[in-house]
Length: 135
Figure 1 (cartoon, rainbow, N blue to C red):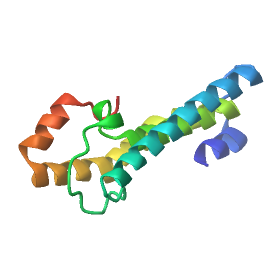
Figure 2 (figure 1 turned 90 degrees about the vertical axis):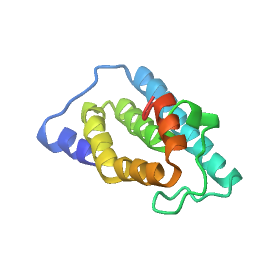
Figure 3 (figure 1 turned 180 degrees about the horizontal axis):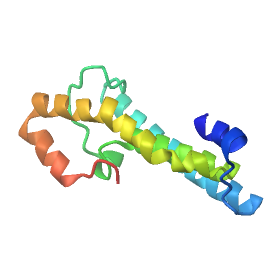
């Protein structure tokens, strides 16, 4: 929303792509994000876990999309945001992605990682060393 308001009322930041390119690239990014979020959610359901970050975690999920990123849901949401920015031709939505991810790190990921390290110890530390936080 902030990106839309900045674009409309403060200073437009167009991407300079044709509408067809914007729609195609934006849809591809958003679809990839949706698939990533869905794949992670399916792994949670299959292992009987609740994907809500404030719920207790009975085990570390290290297969599926979690082999490539420790935070596929957050990465997926970022891809959806990027897809919206591309699709609407709004550079602000894309420019705000790093600050949004920084806020997510500060209010969620940092605490989740500390919790998982306390709960699972060396097995989580080994997982952290073998799989990147983002990509």
